[in-house]
Length: 283
Image 1: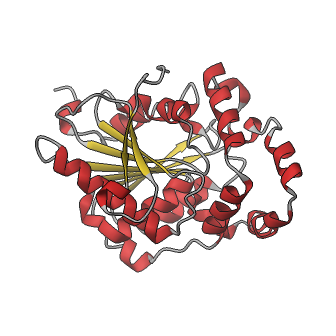
Image 2: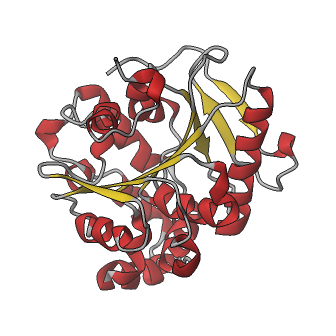
Image 3: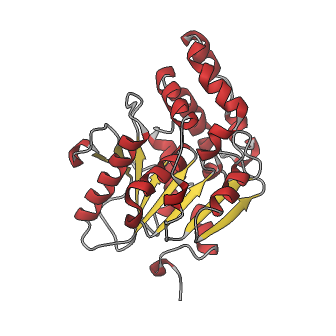
């Protein structure tokens, strides 16, 4: 995995007129003749180092932009989706020529990706959903735990967030020391109020399936077999029954945070399933 850029670039949603503090993080300099790939990360992944690890494999073939939702941004799904759409349109307006747009959502970002599609489905050429948290509200223990989360005292929350929870996110032997530290820092970074809000968003998540069935772009659905948090494989197959042009990829030995595992390279997975832009595929 490559080290993060020394000077990441930031574009705020407020500069696009969207009423939210979410912003795009960009580790690349300038634009190249390649599609725009918009990455919507997981629950509390606002750390620049972790996001850089998750998107590193894309940068050879895409102009990559990652959406970051600051901890104090407690907006609802619709406002967050509107911010993402506004940021995408702003990026396209600045690119030297019109390029196709890929949308990639992981976990919490998978839910947001579905909301983004409902607001602007014609904007995207291809969509990738990785361990989508759209299954969260159908998992009884997650539903109950998230509804009672507000009862956890702040000192206890700080203690629990300091525990080695990485083992629940990925098999320990699948992570580099850099990825392990990035995940630890990420799980410790979200204030209790932020996590409480985002858990509530996932618990109350819903998407109009009849409208999602109208999405006519190809959709790649990735589920990790050893995900210890969400039923990601089952959710990938459920979503495949909704999207008319979908492929399902199962990662047999991966956990929930699969994009930082040593053996997982999403760029290669996309290439293997003919999901890459034509310019990136050797003749």
